[in-house]
Image (cartoon, rainbow, N blue to C red; front, side):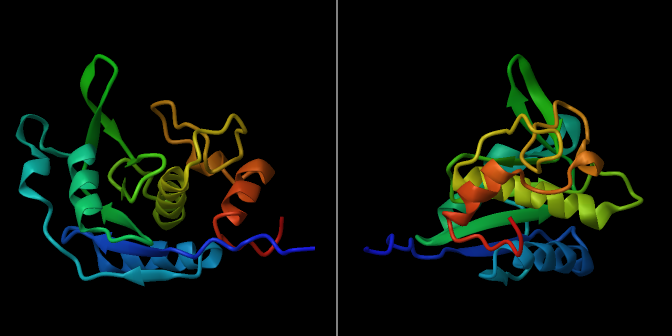
Length: 182
């Protein structure tokens, strides 16, 4: 019997913006490496100028993603990390604050620590990052309450999330993600 053809592995590029502390970036990158081994941390950079939304003193997540996508080559996915407040247009709300944004599928996503609880920030930030990376791989929001891919629904449910559910994990394994147990 012929083995199924392995899809070539992508490399996840972690793109910190200058506002975020290197130890926060390292914590997220180490977490990602546990489930996806091909991770490279890039040098911190400035935000794209067009991403700043002066009226609310925050950054537009869609503008950040567009900027990162334009810099992301084939076989790479870029995740931008920031501690600044980020927002998107959601329905009739022009400027809705979010923890992260990722298009599905997509070449780039962004995660922010701004709206996270301070007590276990690194763990929450990692969960937001892999949620957004899950979107770039093609996953939509999951109805399972314990799954990293559940919708935040305007809140921060990261403390309830424990892992990807079996269905989301199986999908990610088909994309070369590695999990020690399924």
